[in-house]
Image (tube, rainbow, N blue to C red):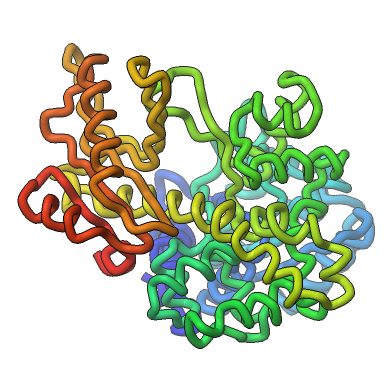
Length: 492
């Protein structure tokens, strides 16, 4: 196994996957020749950093494409190949039909990575490139006499997601499909060097787990304590002189499939404001529901929005923004942009801080609690959940409905009622008490009437501001009541 460099934080599983893919023992008599890997993920997640480290550790070739014409891209690629092989390409490549087979044959001696980063830039001006790669990796292609481990990497999720889907030429050709995700919330806190759990949630609600925001976009500025958090927000994300200030806008602008930015910003603003259903988004935007289906699909394909099904109501779902910085921008910054541009961050932040806690931190805390439930598994609910999400339980007697923030379901067993492992409510800004527990107990009762198995259901209260003494006493006496505070959230 190729050893992961010490300067690469975390990414253990990702490195193991890459190391296995490029390892020499992969070339066997059964499957000789070159192989293909695809690495994708949203921008700023450290894909290039990781692949450059891989190239250095293995002696492989790394080429980062740029926005250029096909002719210029070929020249740049030829120069990079010449530097790597130390052999001059005697006849200039006319197109990628010349470049791909030549390159694969040039890397025939030993298995090594051939990394093409920012592949969507090449695909945009040379749409036949995936077909050319497919041909050369297939029977009779130049890849049969090569040891190259060709890795295509990119951040344009709509492009990268389509490389291996449906009838795409490269479907079925890849030996590695690796998605680089943001750091999970505990890893993000460690990466930022934040030990205070409450401060970690607040920071994560703005910058999430994106590695680049730690150093490149904030110049290494980390809030020293809870007392420093407000000042940190003003001097970083709300500061027009910092790269983080315009980053949310750029994330949207960089996606080529987004042709009407105004519409997409309105859709994102609707979701950030709590309008998470199709109908609610359409009403906020001022369009019919069928008119926002395409924008929502595009945002999903770009990995900016996620559709999450209601676990208790078939066919119903809610939309959630995946990137916290976009939520922060749409809910906080976009409405006061002109003031922020003229350096009135202190005044704006004082005015919107409560909005931040209610519309940004509150929903974000709920998402973190679902992540906790997914990670905790057996230790929290007796067995690993098959499904984690949220749901709404109708309460016809009280003419209302009960929203369950964290639902953990067991795997469906044929002929048996679906078992509910846990029902949970998450509150960031208020001390939780018996009232919240009664709501969960009522939901459990209603779900039992609907045919669910609730005999071992754990009622979980996720409290960002703690729990009342009465509720703590109940939890101490009932094994089916769990209180999960910030310390357990970060130190299970």
